Image (tube, rainbow, N blue to C red; front, side, top):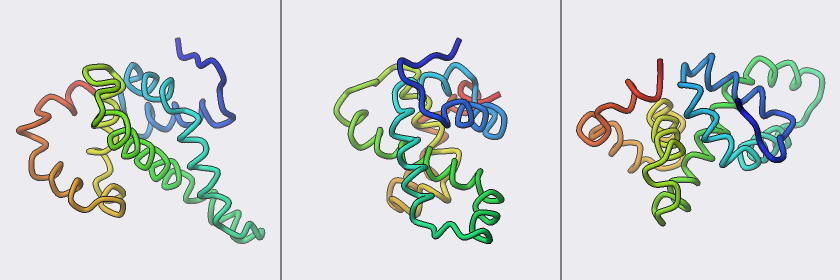
Amino acid sequence: MFSLRKKTPRSKEFLEYMVELLNMNRRYAEAFLRAYDIGVSLTYSETLNKYSLSSQDHVLLESTDTDLFALSLVQQAYTAYVVDLRHGKFVGTDVEVAVWAILCSRPDVLESMDKTLAAYLEAHRESRLPTLFRVAFH
C-alpha cells in the first residue's frame, strides 16, 4: 500500500496521474513518490505560482492540469537523474526504473530541460533500456 511519512496535499493526485494517465505500474509510481513526493509537489506549486490566478487563468490552469503534472514529474525525474542517479543513489532500485520511465515517457517535456539527454534517450532507449516500457508500464 502506498504510504509516505508525510504526504503532500497532491500525493494522491500524482499517484492517480502516474497510474491512470501514464499507465505506469503502481509499484514504480509509489517508489518514485516515496522518494520524491515533496519535490514534485513543490515544483507543481512553484509552477502554479508563476501564473497570475485571475478567474480566467484559473479555468485555463484547470484545463491544463495534466500538463502541469507532467512538467512537475519530468522536472523531478530530471533532478533525480542529475543529483541522485549520477551519484549512485537509488541505482538498481524501483526508483531508478521510475525515473527512466518518466523521462522516456515525455521526451517533449525533457527536451525543454535538456536537449542532449532527450536526444540520447530517444536514440538509445531500445539498446540501453530495452525492457523499460514493458516493465514500468502496463
